[in-house]
Image (cartoon, rainbow, N blue to C red):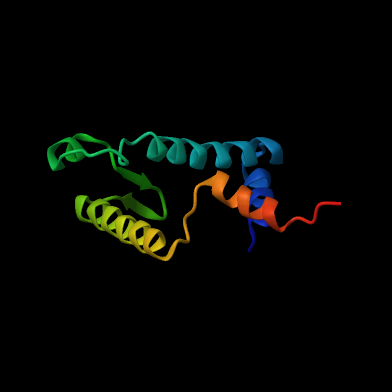
Length: 109
């Protein structure tokens, strides 16, 4: 069963219009996404500060979505390593440097 079929089935079973069921479902996931995006994980926070944040979400029929301190630290280390490699290989260039390169390659008429 795909998403649209499920939405139609729920609509029929509950007597709620398809549009409303669709909006309710999407708003549920939008709320979780917004909550996760507002977590201050990009900055340097301590483990105690992290533990005070709400990083767990119980989703009926799916289970618990959660984020651990170890996972956050691993992601930060991986990100630092990727940035280091990009800088060493010259992959990550400032926008104006790429624009200058593109401008040099454009034939002037």
